[in-house]
Image (cartoon, rainbow, N blue to C red; front, side, top):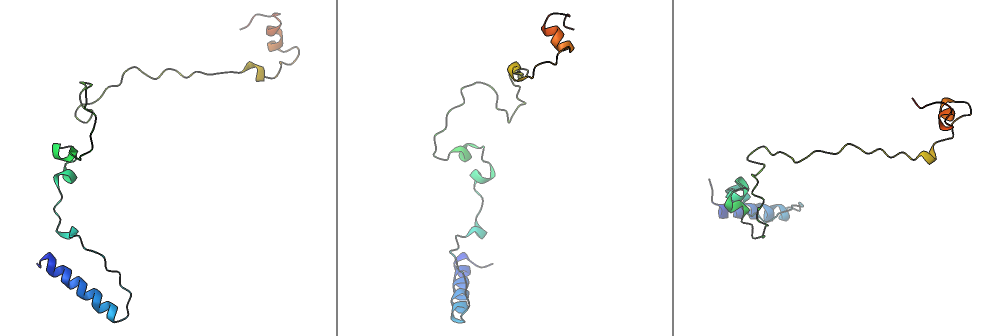
Length: 110
């Protein structure tokens, strides 16, 4: 195992050598991701340290339990759908049909 500074020196030497041979090489800065230990904000984002991002958040004042901990129940239900029918767009009933006779009051509606 080599130190990060020695590894960076080796990469720089490889970039210089490739450039001197006329090759096109893209050499970027190494921030040491290979040796990085994940912080607690990465491994446990819901912990106190993980939530401390410096951005203010609103407090939970609902006194309801967190849905991640217990199964949440909703309130109420979705109302039934409302069907809107524009009767002015319907074609007129054919003469002598049951619809025509019901509209004229000749027979009772079913």
